Image (cartoon, rainbow, N blue to C red; front, side, top):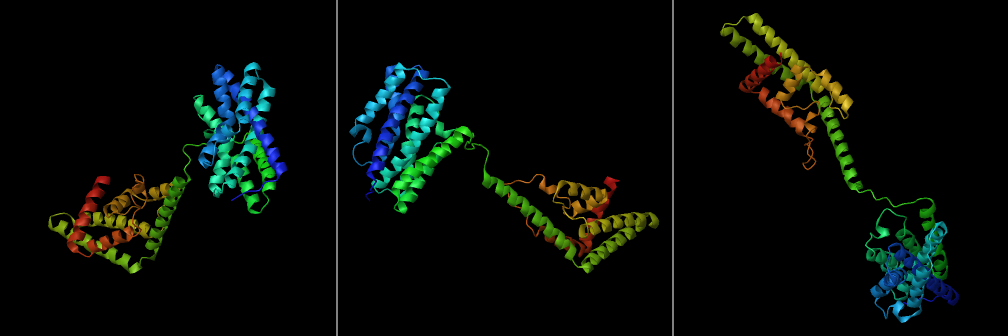
Length: 378
């Protein structure tokens, strides 16, 4: 694909490009002075700053000789910038202002020229954007690495890559509508404005190491799943048939009556045996009422505390004996690597209890366990 560019705009870009090479050569030489380099260091750092991005672009495109080598004026201007920085010590607030804003202008122009050159050789959209970014920021990356510093584009610094991407995007959109010349003018302006926003408004790209939205979302989903499970358990308790609860109560009464008769046969007074059985039955009845009524598993710590206070020690013992987790304590040691509890678990627990109560021998054993727990708690 051949891209036609208006000769006036092409000339404007050429002179802006070579002026940018000179300015970046001066900036590179100034940084070499600050690091205490000799004249060789001045030349190399100036060359990396001024020509590194274009070299990366041309090597990746791999179409002919690198522009910095085929057009000697680029090398001349880069080395001239190094000599200027060697003979003149640029420093102070005025120089910092010129350096930052000049760098922003040059990077904006280079992002556009890199994108246009990629379009000229028919590269796809994403590589075109990459060529614009490499042209704008590649020189500073090579310079920083050569000086033993972390490239500024990687850290929590003022954005340089995002403005270059924005410029490349504007150029590509304009080219798709056959208005490349307009894109070559508007793109750098957009990039320059974004860079100024970073300079004057302090805009920075967040670099929070612990930020992981997918992990946070997974935790929130898990919390919602727990709440849904608790609500499902509560609904299951409310919908359980009343006759089933009455049957459980009757089975416990029969088991306690058999225990009373056995104790009387062993010489215990019927009144004392009946009194103990009555207390245990009342405790069991209260527990079942709370289990099937208002004591719903809490979804927050305050409600959980209220439910815990509402349960008597005897009720907690009975619930623990039959395997029911009313207060939600079983979640305290919850392992995130393990799956959530089966929503049908509570139903299975009630079914297991029904199996026990339907067998006299098993019911008697359950009563004995409850009695022993009741005695320990009292």
